[in-house]
Length: 267
Image 1: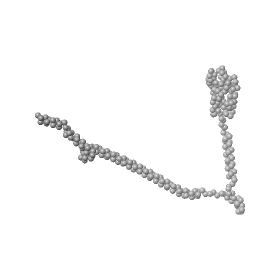
Image 2: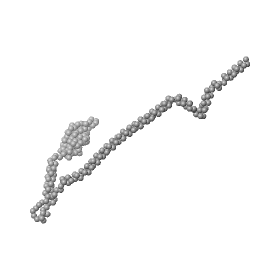
Image 3: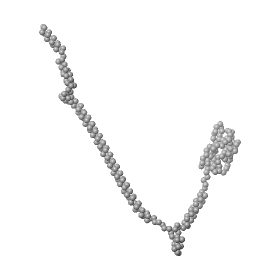
């Protein structure tokens, strides 16, 4: 009985000790310590690489894609530069052709005046003044020679000029003179609403003078039953004026209070 109780107490002690059952934890802690001091081992690096092969492939693909994109941009820029270079070549060729044409034209123009000067000089010879020849001695020839022409030509030109002036004056005198006329609209106001407007208009139209022609008329309400006579007339400016018309119409004091010019237009 005492031996059995001793064995049972040893097992219980071992069961309570868990250092051997947690050995992998202690090993992991020891490995982490040495990795922190010396760095990870080669086998562990290979294991990590083998654990993440997809990540490395993805990075390589991204690098390839970025490099291919850069190559495409470079190719596009090279093509645009080639096109621009071709266009510049065309412009230069066009300018060269235009410059060559200009040089040719300048050369032709430089040669042309010198060649054309001779025929022009030949085509316009100097006219010699007529020399009057008279039979006689040599001393008389100097007196009879007319170097500047005769005065008869000047007299003929003066006569033609005078005839033209006279013909123009006669033509202008036959043309009828333009008579300046004006159209005048007058407002003739009575004294009150009891004024006989028909008699008032008769008095106004009785004013007659040279260059005056009466036209249409109408009655326009003013207010409080009063109406004014609005009458039109055409006058010659040189013969009839507005002052004369107002003076003649206001002479009818029994009917007319005032006369105003409502409108004045040149015809």
